[in-house]
Image (cartoon, rainbow, N blue to C red; front, side, top):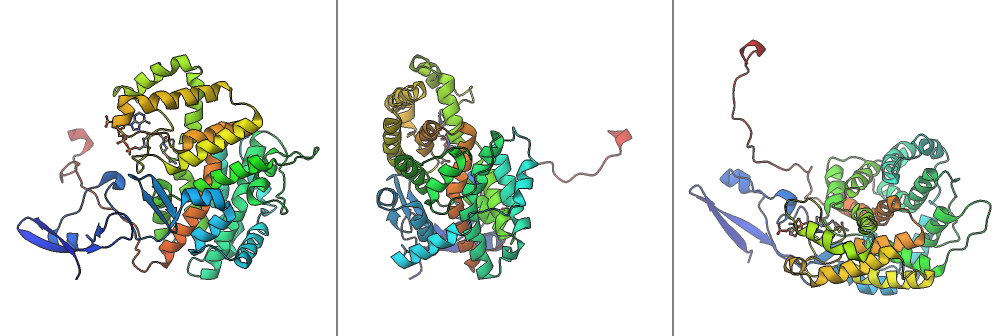
Length: 428
Ligand code: ACO
């Protein structure tokens, strides 16, 4: 029997079908609401609105659980690696050994950028934020790879997907190299995905650079933990852009732009800058007081999450990774880290943070690791973007293949001036 929810308004009643979810709340299908009751629903920030059905990722914010295609993130972070997870997110199942080898080969063969793209990079100012460059270059891929922009052709969708996953590390590394005035380092296809990215960022042509396997593993974990996160702001942006049938590169560029904001992917940069601004543990109470003050817009960056109201399961894995990296590099006593550890302790014991369920999120720790690896804060969000690209693509492909999807077009409650007649300037 189909379950329904009953809604009455203005003397009329409508039976709305309820759709069952495998995990998480069921959803009330309100598509006929406007036609039958002549009302819209109001939900700024979409806190109670499912914009799609999806089979990719599930988050239980109360339990602190994150599943990719059903698999818990902690198991994947421990046992799998980024490219295997890309396959899982894109195609729905873990690959066999042959499928994985084939997928890795396909990604590896697309890591180089069109040579002419170098000139595009060189058109940016040296002090441009790498996110500005990444956003521009990803969008420009539609000009360089227009043989994979027909979204109606499954093969072109596949080629565009592989190209973006393969080239994003090169684009991000080159944005970094350009900003510090060093030559671009070409990808090395004998290295794994994470090692190749570190190599392109830190190698220089005049010296041998060997990627430390512990750092490569930490980078792989950062990528894994950021690979997808269901219908967050940037993913919803990608879906919305894609709903107009825009080409895949334009859609992912839209996602990069949305991710840049400090309330989303920009939080890892903002968090480390905040830790540096705090400077020493004795200044923490001052900043905690500011975070609680409703008249002060300051928030503790790296704390809180829209969905996780218990703990962020990614944060735990990232914290262990941070300990490992800092131990390897012998910098456990660095002042930023001291502040981070003390801040985490104080905030977790503070009534304000406990009552609002504000815990350190994944960005709190990822910034510390990336800083220790030698990345400037401006590179934190590009690294998030390159890691999330596979999630954006998986969600975009799912949307294109979903027969129920339409162009995204929210409604509004208009509260401006009522209809009125134009007055001539002399009469105003
Ligand atoms: N510092 C201080 N107070 C906070 C913080 C914070 N970081 N986050 C939330 N609060 C408070 C709010 O002031 C509010 O208090 P009130 O109930 O007394 O008014 C309460 O906690 C609830 O906050 P909301 O803003 O309603 O929570 P929402 O779910 O909308 O926001 C968000 C989530 C945007 C992540 C928020 O916690 C925040 O700005 N955090 C800092 C930025 C950050 O780290 N973002 C990264 C998110 S993770 C990611 O993108 C990978």
